Length: 108
Image (cartoon, one colour):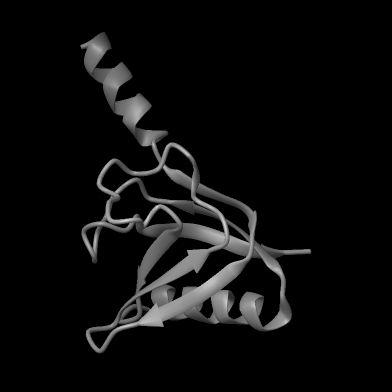
């Protein structure tokens, strides 16, 4: 039981981190899926499901209020040249190869 708890708590820490990165591009698809590409690769321990050069990205769902908020946040940061701090979820929900955005904010 102790080993099981340790494994679950360790995996909970396996997330990609954005530490004062700039937004390079923002993509939105007809399906409502979207992602943001940063000027640096994700730090921390990005999701193991990331592939195809998507280690600079976090995805979000524009069909949700949270996804619309993320889109607003990243476009504001890009338009003003500000940086973002954010964390992923550790999973690749949506695109399957891009880590999903969990939370974040604009800084400086």
